[in-house]
Image (cartoon, one colour):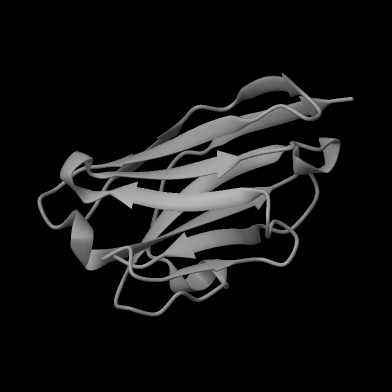
Length: 124
């Protein structure tokens, strides 16, 4: 059982950077792999990045490689997503999600717990 709350989104200009945070409750945060997904209006939820509970492995979608960095601080029960060189096509609601186990699937239905999302809007 884990509850997730995203924060850090906002309205930014193309080329800017953001750091999104995913704060989790509980004492067993390190047991959960965490994924970041994003969803633009009218589009399917899209995998962006994921990290294992130990932070020993990460995985990124091809669309975000080189610009997104996922990290975690288990002492703070927080996962971060740093986004650099933001583009208008990055505009979406960004969600973090948790699952048990060491795999990092890209399908949203493999993650059991979800936050409420944080809006990122990138203007040109």
